[in-house]
Length: 337
Ligand code: DGY
Image 1 (cartoon, rainbow, N blue to C red):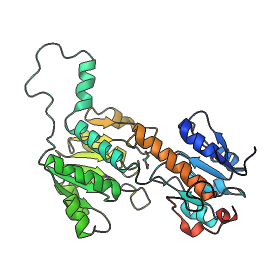
Image 2 (tube, helix red, strand yellow):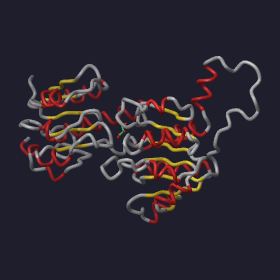
Image 3 (spheres, rainbow, N blue to C red):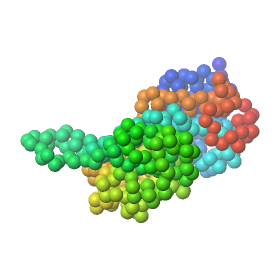
Image 4 (cartoon, rainbow, N blue to C red):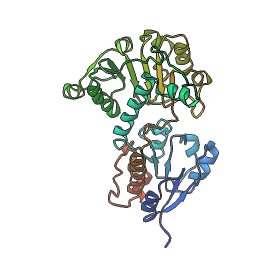
């Protein structure tokens, strides 16, 4: 039986999630990952009612130009800097993301990077795999930076930042954070975290984790001037977005011994990675996988599917997408369902 709505899925997804979608809508799913030019995206979106897109799909006014059908874009990720939200809202198209379901997994991964960078896990493994552990090893080889008992700094204290902070207690750490707005006292107490000025955060953190959303305001929030304020023994972790750190300035600080180590999951211009970072042994690099546990990626995909279906008037949440970013677009095209 033909279905009233069609949904485009820009990348391969879990079959069970696609099956949920297929109960209600016609599904057009891409069979492989690919980076699409704006005109390709425009063509893919031209005759569908909804779409599930990834962070590599930039949906802006140009891509939406002339589009008459689209009612909802569901982003596979909590961060949505790939969506031009004002353009979507102006066109009456709903936009959704995947908050909450990835909070704990992403916070776990911040710690994985922090520990790996501080204790030199990746470089030690590379050395061992290269067959270089032959004879004796010096007692003062492989000296890392302690984590327990140190000061954990967090820049950006939303849900994921708070989850990173809570884990600090297990390492007996003092936790300080900077955020545009200070958290309510009760939340600070629960996270055992104190608000400080950004400059203080940079100067006092032994381990600094970046968890803020990307925007024009947070572009190069950590650049050459900020790195100058950090301790030369400090470790920097970025699980937020490329572009929040000036990667070239970071590479220079690490090379010149002005910072001890870094753990990076995101990069300016990814999937390209600044060659200067690749060359440095004290950097742990990963390909934007902070939310990539089997359970969490499945939950993100399911939430994106639930959002699309709800926006198109199907399923248990019909008319009420669980994580709507632009309620002001309601009454636009989605209302016609
Ligand atoms: C997000 O959800 O924004 C993550 O970066 C995707 O893994």
